[in-house]
Image (cartoon, rainbow, N blue to C red; front, side, top):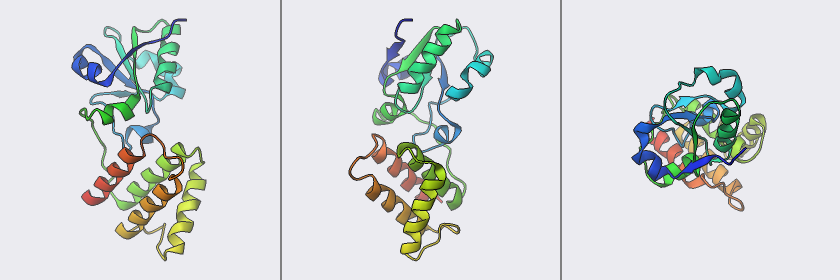
Length: 189
């Protein structure tokens, strides 16, 4: 099988109307700090084969994920199923955000929702189970006299500081983008 065709974010945005966009990230990522391409259909990679019939035919498919790795796999899987043509977004939503292209974002409705979004992002980028990420943050908040279970603006700020400190030696490629998005969401609540 040949490598999937690839496209840069700038070119994908320029040609946006040519594509049906399929985002293969998990729901929490689609709704998370990097946002998603406007109008993108969410079909998480683990569900791709089972839900392939939901993907409309007739236009090339632009496959999107966080960094371009899972979407490349999705291109290969869809090609194997005879669905396509497919095009992979190089660099995924990280590159899309770095290019400052239009992004739809789902704003958390509460401090608790924001905290859960931070937990899930921290778990993903740190290769942790969500419960392990929660335990780390719960401990950090308790040490500061703050509550994990009844989040406040101060506790969310401390969580963001803790996340940043814990990733200082090996920050994920979207750390700056994600932390900035979390801080914007906090300011909006």
